[in-house]
Length: 185
Image 1: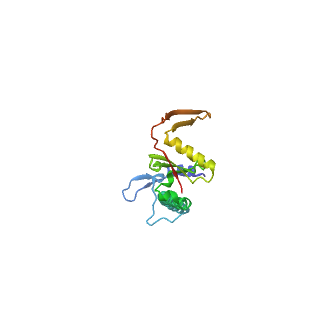
Image 2: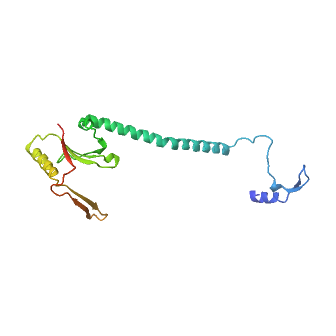
Image 3: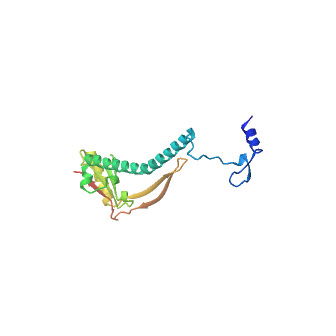
């Protein structure tokens, strides 16, 4: 006999409530015991699932804090290492996040204020020239800046690989340039 057949047969069995005398079907009964029912495997699974949910919630709460602490620690470590490599910047109150390494034609370009999302000036930073070629490069950069021969162009590369030049703002000769070159040394 299947479970469904057995359950359907229970609909045919009637009883009388001992308290009120009302007629009822056996299939309508709600069974209960006076004590706590014995623990089953399903209870253990439900308890483990609840425990896992609580652990996941605590992990999610702590994860962002741990990530933020690691990010701050990494940034502090990077600044410490950069200070050891380039003490020139820290002595001149240059935010290391504003420094970009070029190597050629100058060692560094400093976009002052970019870490605060407002570029106040662009500084070229280079070591003293050790040869005539480097000296000529530095002199030509110095002359171009002091004469205001500075140009800003935005190049956009499309998904197809085409280069699009946008808004070219020219600084005319004689207009004072805001950019300057700083020599390390």
